[in-house]
Image 1 (tube, protein in one colour):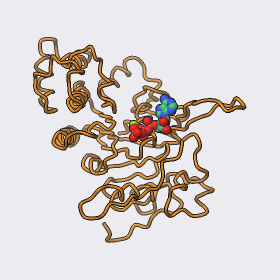
Image 2: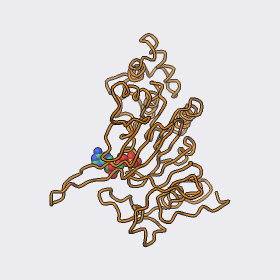
Image 3: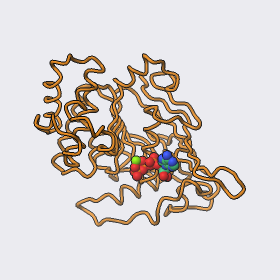
Image 4: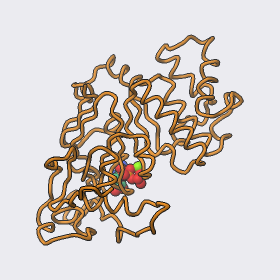
Length: 324
Ligand SMILES: Nc1ncnc2c1ncn2[C@@H]1O[C@H](COP(=O)(O)OP(=O)(O)OP(=O)(O)O)[C@@H](O)[C@H]1O
Ligand SMILES: [Mg+2]
């Protein structure tokens, strides 16, 4: 059953005016189509500025799309009534990219974690401390953290509290924005294992934003690759990473460190400004395989014949049989 359905979602921000007085628009999302079903584990990958965080802010209803429609369980998100919105906030949890900034600095860890439990009536006051301690243990923190303020925690500890808070309401869907990046590898492994167990054993739906393709393939069965506000390729993670169809996906996999080959600086230059999108294909200015037609046509995301994959490229890479 579909949990989220995004139909041609656009989001632009007005970032100034031209000398002629016209609005200068930055297109953070430029026609995203995405369906997420119950139990799906989906990675969103793509360079900084490709629109990943904007997409999840819309999915959480924190901002409204400029165009397009966004459904949560067949109802348009903006039309959820009060009761449905409350159910949504219990069912869908979010782990912010900026964990410390997402916490009230005046609340102690015990209250930060206990609040969703009481709000959603998962237990009564007398049980909260014990439940919170158990939750802290799950994310590798001791109960001695209960009385601390966020400012008294290290960066890694705050990130783990953020994961614990997302789990506190016993959600069915977790949306996580770079929640393990920069953590010690042992802590990262612990949190990834925890999330993976929750997905496999409890059928949790996961939308996981990451720059780390290894993390994407460990946690998520499907991956959507974003570039300049669009999904340019999507499909099963392992196939997509081992046999990319879009030159941008190949560039991402080539620039991912691996023990057995030298590292390629696969992509030249920076992602162009979303205020001035390139003519034609949005990747044409950096694509190593660019052809004349690419400078004139922006290819839509299309199902690739014979593959369980969709790609937005006029000249998708050939999938060579036997090559992994
Ligand atoms: N409130 C805003 N006002 C103006 N521009 C914005 C706003 N929020 C995001 N943007 C712009 O939209 C584009 C997409 O931003 P977004 O934060 O979604 O990228 P991202 O893929 O999450 O990047 P990162 O990997 O660095 O977190 C960027 O060019 C960003 O500067
Ligand atoms: Mg982001």
